[in-house]
Image 1 (spheres, helix red, strand yellow):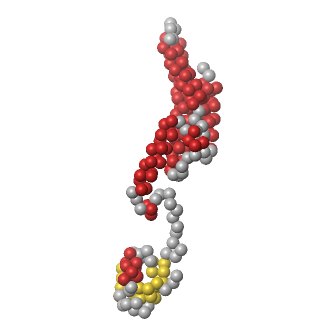
Image 2 (cartoon, rainbow, N blue to C red):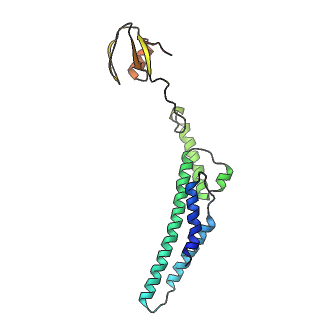
Length: 192
């Protein structure tokens, strides 16, 4: 049959999907054309009336191989579209009307449900849990503190430190023990 002439345009489109950042228009005509050829091949297999069983079996094998190649082309095309749609959906950007027009009805339904799900999920969580919000590294993870009251040895996540009245030391401010001592007024940050 015409397997390469039918599937080659869809394979080329699949390659373009993989290489572009945007979602391309759904190639309904190309997919439909391949599906029609697959159905035609199925009907021709049923209508074989060869007396020679070996010849009949060879024709069936050839037609089956053509069908498999065409089905593989369709599956690869849809797989690449799904992968591209996942990437775009995970960015949590709202699609423009032009981008929505490029999607099938099922893909549009997916995006609408996904956006509603994300909206409902985010409305129940504090802003600090947003997965798309930017994270900033602390400017200085360590801070210099002066010991206001004699505390003695304190166990922190980084190990044991001695905090004697009037001394200065470098500590990790994010450590819960240090943060608690600063809050209670036993330690005072001396750097800004």
